[in-house]
Image (cartoon, rainbow, N blue to C red; front, side, top):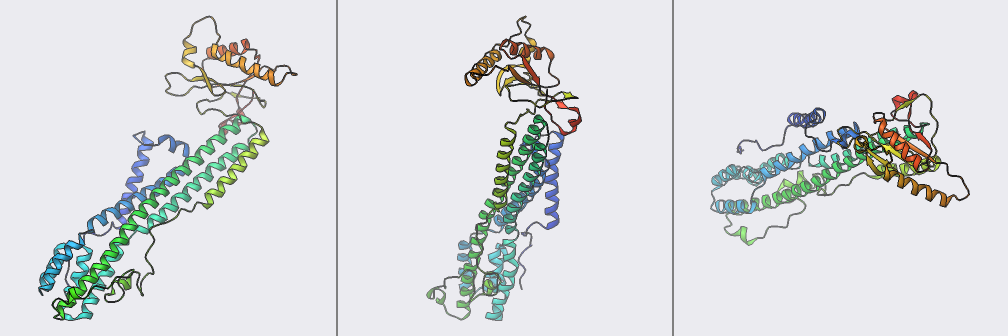
Length: 446
């Protein structure tokens, strides 16, 4: 049987695939650790180690997709143009020339037809056997690893679900804390980790399934093309071999089934009577049921937690609360937050219930003897007025909670306390972290 060029058009071997995966994944992790240019750095930081499990799946998916795309591009040929050239040579009875044409083309279609034509002088059964043998070698290469993309899509989604559950475990641990600030900090951090893993897992899964649908559609189209033109090439040879000049053009080619199953044995190894069954679907689905069930549980849990506690005191990630030996639970009151983020030219901001009233730098640099923060005082007076309207029979408690970073200049805190006093808020409570719970990462009290 003829040898058709160098077989350098195969897929990546498993060892090289693993090496590429290690290089891609290791390079990504190296950029992240070294502080180099890494997209979505904040997302990976908040998502925890579960993000790197998904990243491993993403890197493998990318390598498989690129390998499939490059292989299909290499083996794609203009089948109609090739068959026109082959037809003119075969119909002239020059089978040796036809084999040479197939060797020079060196594509799956030409190799299958060329293998049969190389045994043209041995009869019909020898030609069919040679074409079958070559087809068994070529068809698996075209479909190889494409199905893994659908599997990677579901693995990425389930890995994202795993990371989500890890984040929720941290959230549940946060809810069990006694201090409100501890509870809020750990709950927020756990939910952030869970949502980041969910988002990245879904993004990777959707990308993998899109790649699978496109590549599998291209693969099936190529297989159908191989079946059709291989059948056509066989009939072309047989018409000439039987001395039926023009018989090839007089008798139309039978419409191919899912793959060749009658005249040429190509289909027997692929979707024919002895093959793998019907043609593969170009669609695959994500297994989202476990994730949907999990989110329903989370929703119920958060609703019950809020109903049980009445309120959650959230602490910004830019605020590191000071520590205290003794703490008490904080009651509901307006919250003034003074942050101290790193590398912030404004030196942090002062907010009242999330609304900015000043910047830390502005308050620190202001040497005016009047310590009043006008915007803060005005908003506190509005809140005091609204409280009295809704509670006409009660005396105003004048309570306010200050969440101040442990590194904030005391001059800023004095101005905040002075402004609170001017607005009628004489009971100032400070959110702190209990020293016994320092390792837990949060706290609350006054």
